Length: 443
Ligand code: XUL
Ligand code: CO
Picture 1 (cartoon, rainbow, N blue to C red):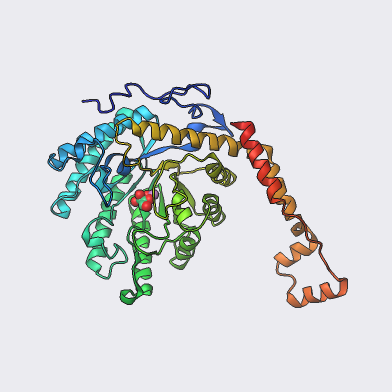
Picture 2 (cartoon, rainbow, N blue to C red):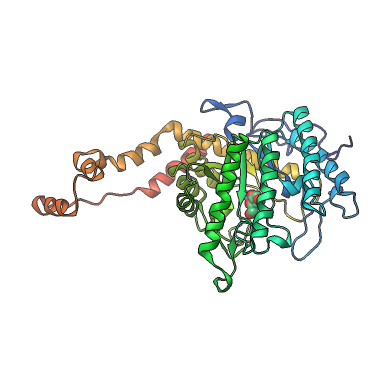
C-alpha cells in the first residue's frame, strides 16, 4: 500500500519539554499516569475523518488547496474511498491517537440511489473493520451526514416534508448499524440544519415535536440492536441555520426533558460552539455535568474576532484547563473523549501540516490535563467553593432546602432577629491568581 505521509516516516513519539523537535510530543506522554489513569485513558483523543481527509481546503471564495488525491473529481469514487481510508489509518497510527470518528458520507460516497449508498457504506465498513483489527484503532463515534444534500435544506427531522424525515431516519438507522458493528463508543447527532431561517414559514411547535419523535426512534432502535454506546446531541447555537434548536447544553437538557429523553441522550460539547453561544467552554461542561448529560467533547476553538465556526486546533492552555478541570471534577470521560473536530487553515496545504496541527493540539490538551489535575490535587479551589456555601449546612440552610419553611416564616425570622448578613468578598482575582500560579508551577 502506498505511503501518503512520506515526510513523517515513523510514528510521533514523546520526547519531553526540552525537545525542540517539532514532530515530537513535548507533553503528551500516553503512558504517564495522571490521577490514577494514563494520559491516553484520560484524554481519549479522537481524529476526525471529515475535516482531515474529506475536505480539500475549499471555502466559499475559492477552490480546494490541499493535496488529497482521493478528492480528485475524476477519481473512481470507491477506489478513492479506499485510498482515503488507507491515508487516514496511516495518519491515525503515526499520530498515535486511539480513536477516530466519521460521518457515513466521509467514508463512503453517496450513490445514485439510497440502496447504492447503503451498499457502498457496507463495503467501507468492512474495510474499516479490517483496518481497525490490524491497527488497534477504536471508533469514538459515528454520525450521519443529514445536512449536506439539497434534500436537507429545510432540515432532516424538522423538515416540513415527512419523506425527508423518513430518508434521514433510514440514513441514521444504517449509520447506527455501522457504528454498532465497529464497536463505536458513542453515536452523535449534530443538529445540522435542525433549526430555521424565518418564522414566516416555520411551525416551530411541529418541528420540535418531529425532532422529539426522531430522537425517540433513535433511542428505541439503539435498544433494539443492543448498541451500548451513548447517544449524544452536539449543541450549536447557529450556523448553518440562523436559529438552531439545540442552542446549548441547557437548551438541549430542557428539550430532552420535554420529550422524555433526559436519561437516554447526553451531549457532545464543542468548545467553539460554546463560544458561539456566548458561553465559556467550562460553563458548557459544568451545565452538562450538573444535569447528568455530559458525554464527549469536540476540542476545537474559534477566533476571538471571527463570529463563525473556524474549527481551529486548540492552543490555549488557559482556556482548555478550566474545561478539563470541570470534566475531572465530574469524574472524567466515560464513553467520551477529546475529538479533534479541527480544520487546518486553507494555506496549510503541505501533507505534514496535519501532523504539526495535531501534535500541538495534543500537547495543549496534555498540558491542560496536568494543570487541571494539579488544581484537583491541591484541592484549594474546591475548598474555596465549599467554604463559600458553608452556611447552607447550618440548621437554617437545611430547613430552607428541605421545604420546612416558607416566605412567611423567613419574614418572621428576619424581623424577629434583625438578620442583617455582612457581604463577603468573592475573591475572584485572588482565585484567578491561584489558577495562574498553578499553570506556572505545573508546565
Ligand atoms: C459542525 C460540527 C460537526 C459535528 C459532526 O459544526 O461540529 O462537524 O461535529 O457532524
Ligand atoms: Co463538532
